[in-house]
Length: 321
Image 1 (spheres, rainbow, N blue to C red):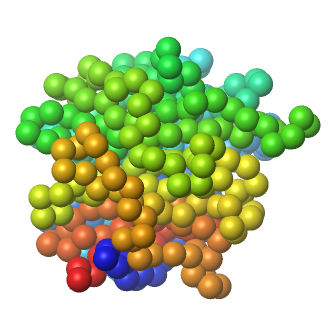
Image 2 (cartoon, rainbow, N blue to C red):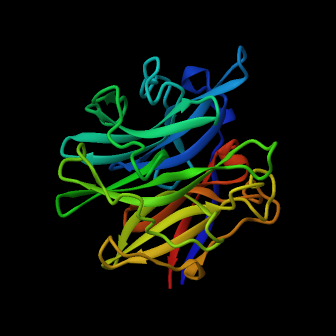
Image 3 (cartoon, rainbow, N blue to C red):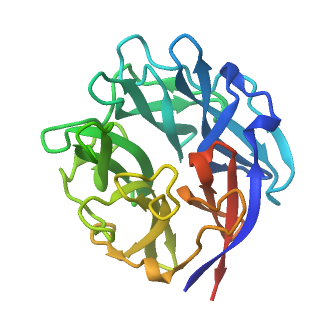
């Protein structure tokens, strides 16, 4: 069994002055481990009162390895939003970071608004040469986006370099669905896989759903994260129902698990995962946006709780049986 011990919420965005006028949300926390602290990137939001919409920005918090003492919070723009009309014009949510030589590659989920549906997304690449303080795009377009059999919502990248090959697990949309004729459309997406020799030019395993669905064909799967434990690869992700998931506790996000021996074929194994919503705490309605990482020989899980991370993120530690 993989039992996770919750260590509590470790970051609340309202307690800090975040850059770009952001006040709410610390979504999809992603870790970059340094010698004496951990930098955790997250997506936060600024509100535009002229149209009532949000813009998602990347920020970070530096925290000691006891995951209690905060060293500092970014007060500068970590990465600019995209140019007018580009795939990331209206936000970045989330950004996954990976060390590559002396650089840090940041794989971004760019958000752009649409008319018939709220948004579409694609995956971009930005590079940091100042130890992750700021990132600069390689170009104004994405490195991975919608294609012939993945028509929309390409996002949530997690990149791992194995034997010199870049592997990316991401989500791809299969379409949008309405729960009723007059309802707003909800997106439907699954987890896919791509690979690359250089982290820039990617080959998709086009439209291959690599994780089986537990809730039926309309299960939505999001934000995969992969780690090697004792020679076996383990993936954590979150999943939910397509409709009525925002405030219905029984249909909201939960964390799922799968394992693989070869990074290609995955066996879903949620029953081996011991972590669930709390009774009355900040994570009592849902668990979402997991990120698993190793730090000083221990394995930790960052995650968001109720309201999709509006009130920050917490951490859990893997207790090995």
